[in-house]
Length: 411
Ligand code: C6P
Image 1 (cartoon, protein in one colour):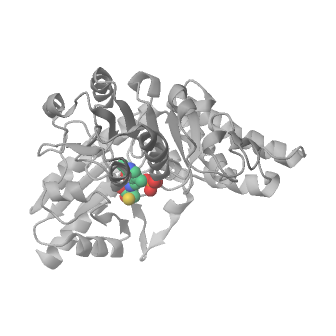
Image 2 (cartoon, helix red, strand yellow; image 1 turned 135 degrees about the vertical axis):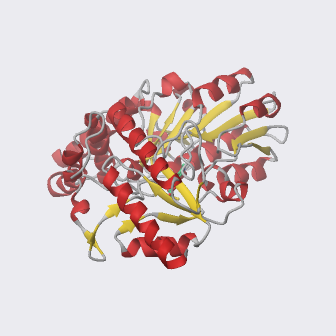
Image 3 (cartoon, helix red, strand yellow; image 1 turned 120 degrees about the vertical axis):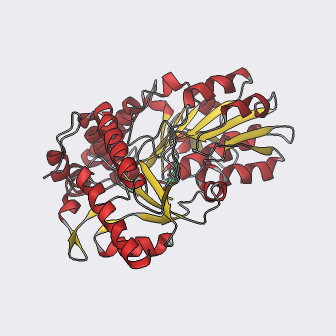
């Protein structure tokens, strides 16, 4: 029997996800790895299949019926994402390959063209490698300096450090909305307001926030916001970048090719309007359709209901895990979502992951592409159970039983 928390009909939600019927190693699947990638509801799988069965054609290119239908489906998905993020215009929504691709677009198009050796880029100690390495690359290209906001022992940003770290030289502040390794929810609106005081541009990595909470880019007032469909119950290989139109308009293209031009000759090329200027080549049309279906799915559930449900589940899991002997939670921010990270003082995370897998439990073990976070806690790896909207208290109970089994083996 599953539990009913907050306003979600969790039995119904679970029945939406065909993969949850699967057995793994002879046990019912307990999927606690949604931060890596979330499972897909039937409506998303069906939307992609339906696109290929009934519509498939290239977009923006043909006068024939199928091409018009494909264009309508593709642009319809863009409109859904605009609404989901509360952007002002569809011109501000660029389809990307995902969050990594979106951040690289900003760093190579915007940052590379504005940064000089006198400038500073400010990131945080909580970042995924996707929000570190692109900034290191562009700093190397331009001579700009990379600076880092430290975190406290709970995994929260040291906000007092901003007084010193934000300077008139700060041109870009880049941070995640929710940390993938710790689950910390960062005060992005407050940081954006602080960044404005020094006229810095704010780039938010929203990969882990989009599945867990309502996002309003106008309210945050950030300049860029990057998301990945696969973390929000949509397909892999597609995502979106929100950018303020005034900035996007003046940015040089990121990639050259078809669809991003109005006119090409050997003497001169005129680039296309927004958002197409940043979408060279045949896009991931089926992916966009699937992402649109995922946005519909999340919107129908209601992001506030999702957040409330997962918040209760996180509290339940935190309490249950914290009571286990030899277990140390890694990441205990006051404001957290989606992630239960921990280490055991008697077993290596990889061994824990392997034993849990034998019990049908999927968790991620390792550095979670956030090695500086691991360094901060002086661990090489953690065990991360990350929540999706289909998880239940019973899943947490199975995890706790699994860890007790690990304790029997190693303790
Ligand atoms: N984190 C995890 O297991 P892509 O791969 O481009 O869709 O997303 C990259 C990314 C960027 N920022 C954050 C905060 C992320 O969590 C991720 C992806 C996965 O935590 C895979 S490493």
